Picture (cartoon, rainbow, N blue to C red):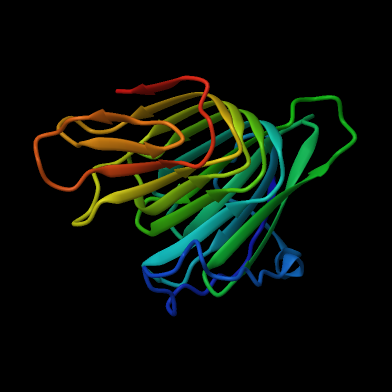
Length: 223
């Protein structure tokens, strides 16, 4: 039977304000308990944590990887799940405190790919921060609830699928250089890119997305 890391995560004290300006005080030692998992998991290394019913959380990836995939789904009692493949070159180590979740990748010594897949609970509103670089980044967040997305470690290629925003404009930050950035938003949702790159996709009114490009983008496509 596979095993997985579990961490207790407190989210009740969090508000929507100040996600990306908050100091991160995360304990890497808080997730050592390993428990059996009754539901079949993908083969590989799995770290997972449970929430306490809070509405907001922040997830930060601090280590580089060849490929990074982030999705949102109904995880039942789990708040997040971080998976690396069996035989892969890295395994996840996750710590959490006060509704902030930090994931790092540690070498396994295997010759497999340095790939990580992150699944976030779709019923929680997330701030997502990718602090380290990656070759390929897929952020399939169409089913997510977001307060913001920041890709600040750079990427060779970024594919970002955004959900319909809430009552206010959604925010995306891009930094450290991205070779090719592709951004998908729902039909009728306007997207404006400003900063080091400028572009716009008109919409049908209502809240849209503002993409802040803090460094050069080799190529930018708005869908």
